[in-house]
Length: 182
Length: 126
Image (cartoon, rainbow over all chains, first blue to last red; front, side, top):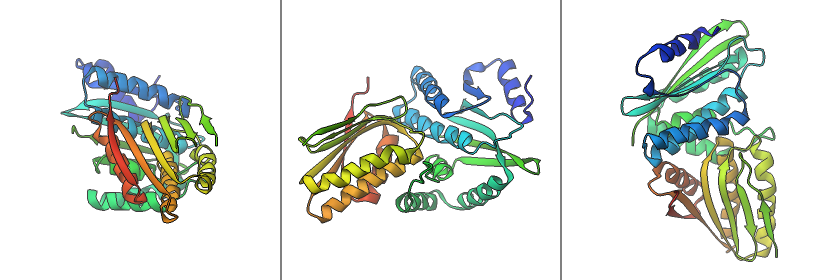
């Protein structure tokens, strides 16, 4: 039984609609680093079969990795809702939709960052990315602090997000990233 | 002068520091669980390298990488860029599959920040 209201409608649509060819990949449930490789491999094989360009395949892989890593690195430990990652064909491009629980504390930091990125033009975003990449260091925990900025910059700002409060300590973070055909 | 090899895994690339050939090659997927732990030993070896060798060529051929690895790669390139100030020549061969503009653009980002000379080479990925 699917209990996550943020994704159950989407999964129901996928399972019932006639045109299932537009849905390329769906991951629903616990996600960890080990699953990233195999997910990316499946996605790559599908895109090769569908004759997407090398540029589009690389873009999807690079964004997919970043989104999945962001999901499991910032997943709220006592989450009540499972995460999901969905890749589909949309128009002439591809769309990635993801969702995962985060803590209230993380929500505040994230919202601040996302609102800032959304206020910038793609060029301003690119300049900010270069600046942040150039000045920062990897923490001993292995974090670069660049995940969301990388997603916004690499998608040329064709990204949007939604934060929904679940309870006082938990929020659900949903993201949609559109990859336009080169 | 030796050859140092780090074997590739399903999350990390093969790294070969080849002192006789003056090259460091990085090949494969680069999404280490901890980018600091993966890149720090390479960075330390690179600091030793500059005391011993007059030139350095990176051969980088990555399938995909995460943002932690972007920082790690850039740290290597920035360290190598310091060589240039000491009159040691450092440059990068950035290899991508034919027609892969996305990964090529990633190389251009590193080039822009590090100011190293990048040469872009297309390889047949099939």
